[in-house]
Image (tube, rainbow, N blue to C red; front, side, top):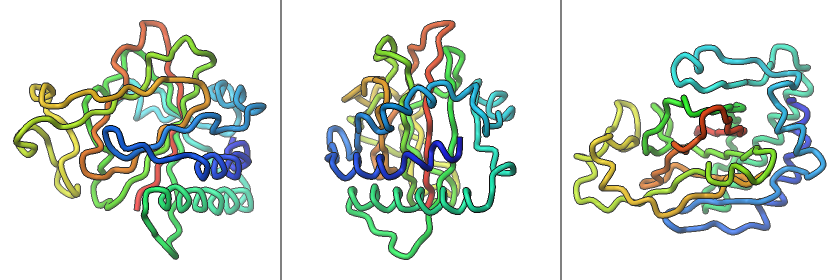
Length: 232
């Protein structure tokens, strides 16, 4: 699967370069046909693919079935080329948001997610992490058809008057990153992205980039996606 992803980066770069940053309700990108059309089915069937290993800890913590790349069984040449292309893609995306990290090699964590109605991650949050100044999250939607269009990510804007009172900030993070459950009425859902096949949702963790995973996944159903996340 490492090589399958690597082979998409030039196509992904072209799609990003030919797409615009959206600003409602905050800067993000939503890009169709992010993977080569002829290769898309292979990604939707990732749970039977070679080169992935399941993370049992994530399942225990969040009820999310998560797969990582099995780097221990990849050649060093293939890993170096993946890193080169992943770093190139990061800088192209960062540039779209007016950011420059010239001279820095920034590599992603790569995770395939299989979410169900049992998913425990249901808070409104930003992608802030301890000791990380900037995070770029690129989520590729992997439904097999249009039947799951309602499972998209929700984007929020803050409409309250005391952000510190309504949110949580963990030590080591650059700002508030999670909304208190009893304060969600102070956040307005301004947009729900359609969970359409082969689309990428790109979210930088600027101040105010509040969003939420879907809470409406039907029992017995799965929401599949691929998260590429760069932390600077």
